[in-house]
Image (cartoon, rainbow, N blue to C red):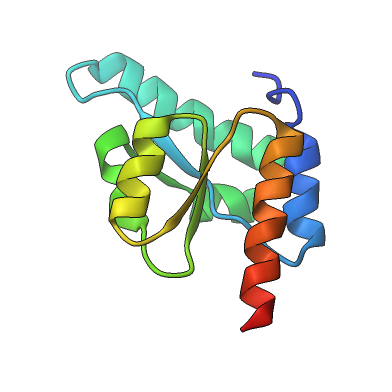
Length: 118
């Protein structure tokens, strides 16, 4: 599977800002057992190939409604699903709705500026 448009650029920005992002990715529902097994395996393989073993080992793969369980103070979720962002923010984290790479970088930079003031 190829990178999403702007994905490498966004990852590079985060790394150059001093962050080692954790990949939080949704899996198909349990009712789709074959797809679930294939998706888990495929995502880990992709992470190993594209980002390295550390990313693959630290990735959090869960069902979509469980993403917000990883939320909390000082945790930022970048996601293209507005429902995930709302749930994340309700759980105490900061969410950035990803529409395009430039917008996401601007939003993340604003968060960094606020954090550095304190």
